[in-house]
Image 1: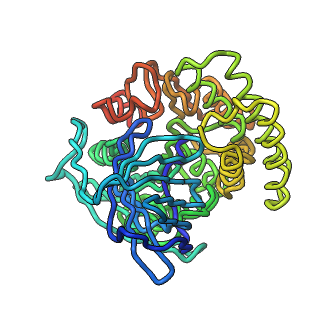
Image 2 (image 1 turned 30 degrees about the vertical axis):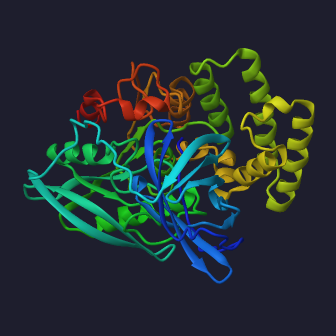
Length: 459
């Protein structure tokens, strides 16, 4: 799963005071994360008490994310976005340049900030379609009455007369725009183009709190996203050019979980397409994901076993401690004890106390705690429509051997025999042909989605 960047809740907390250099304005940086080069923008504004700031991640369609703590003293800058576990620490090295370090979820990366916008070379994306389209497109808005949120998206319709079979695209984790942009790719744009050319109406939409959609992403759970998808489904059912008896869902990664949740609640869902969707409880998936990525990255067996035991113990506490305040204290005791026994478990380079507090914030984040506790199998048991589940053999984020088997078994054991589950050789989590499957490859691959995946969905 990819719970990357960024969410919002308007918290303003400012510390420090202007010393000699006024750092008001926008500061730009390129963050080289696994699979992508992300533009980040910190927007600083001087106030009586010091500074306030917001963070933009334009490559992900996320803007105006509140910086919850900021300190500027002796030409040293620290910024934190607490709900996301983001911390930046840097020093002014020139009037228009700050050199520092970005940390999130234990990931430690260099990040230099400048007052000048970075220039990024656009990589080749040969599958990305461009107008004129041989079909109709509508920018639409629809209302989620369950949470009083207005969502925005694009509906593509074949040029012929309807009513059409239709499909709602549900994006993976993290704040995604309607094209599910990641690593310079636009998978949902490619999918929508292919499906519409094949005769489907396709609705793709911006996640709540992202791009043109209203609401707040920061504390939303997968169950909240399921209500957004339900609102998209309801919207399609209001249209005379859509056939409600032939309207289904396509979910990628966490979007697959969301599709499963919704199909379990709504028997009128005509079909499910699950791309790299989890089929096991969140704690089991995270351990399998970590093992796959660490092993592919060359970690030794001994090192992995230590990390596995460390993380498994933390996940068990999350699963068995529903009260968040009690959970925080239990996690603190657990992490301190573990690090006292084995300081090498802290691979972040951060001070132990800071590392522990970061881990606690991440694991007590409402989305993460709910994800760890959620088991999709009971919901899969309630799904009665046809299901197509696809995984790549080189998917390190949702390993196919674990998840495809669990999805197929949960459906068939409860009487749903309309299941096709396929492991596709050589494909990664984004359904690209890959060498290793590591997230670092995503942006380096020109292909957005393997053509065979597109053909299997519509055959």
